[in-house]
Structure formats: structure tokens, C-alpha cells
Image (cartoon, rainbow, N blue to C red; front, top):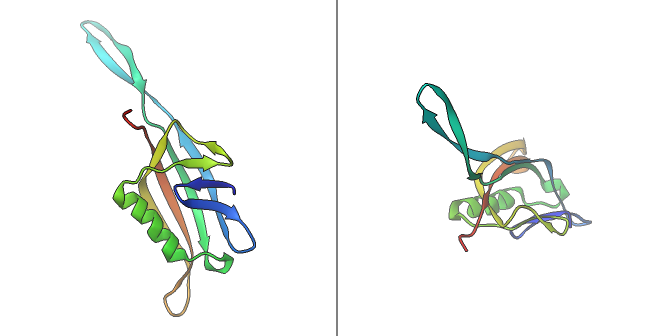
Amino acid sequence: MIGQLGDYEFEVSSESVKTFDGLKFSNSASYTEHKVLGRKGVLEFTGLNASSASLKISLNEYLGVDVLEEISAFYDYMNEGTALVFMLGGEVMGEDMWVIESLDEEYTEIDNQGGVRRADITLKLKEYLDDD
């Protein structure tokens, strides 16, 4: 297994190929600016923002993947606000869980019956920290 997002396993096997490309993480800090009369403002570090990530998943019926079913599963995660564990290899990414903030679809092959044979989806994830 290459990795996992919730119950979705990224893997290459004799039965199917489920991979991703272009994994990118973004991290940032937060500051508040205090205005000072007649001078430049003073910055105060107020903490770290939740991390974000994006990745492109290629879905291909010819490689053992039910394209629309897989897309639907990711929509379910997003629409329900499900917090997901994101792993690469055996390592958990981030401090806790992730939610799908947005999902973009691109159908790259449609057959003569209107069936989607291949599609690329791009997921934008946001780190979701439990209050506990």
C-alpha cells in the first residue's frame, strides 16, 4: 500500500491501480498587527494556521477502477465533513486528521455511450485538529 485517505487505499496491484500525483503541503503562521501612532505596526505571533494539502488522483477504468463510484466516495467524505486519516506508507501525515475542502473533476475519456472511462480529480485537504 502506497498510502491511505480514510478508507481509500492508494495501491498498485494485479487487480487495480490507484495512485496520486503532485502531492503538495502548505503551512503558514498567523500574526496580528498592533498599530503604533507615528511608527510602523508591531507584529505579534498568534499561532500556526491549519496545514493544507492538495493532490491529483487519476482514475482509470482500464486499470480496475470504477471511476464514478470512486468520485462519489470522495464527494461523500466532503459533503458529510468526514475527518480522515491521511497516511503515506505507514506514516500519518499532519498532527491529526484531514477534511476534503474542495474536489475538482476532469473527465479525460468518455465512451460512445456516455460512460466515464478515465478521470482526474484534485482534492484540496485541510488539517482538522480535534479539540481534545
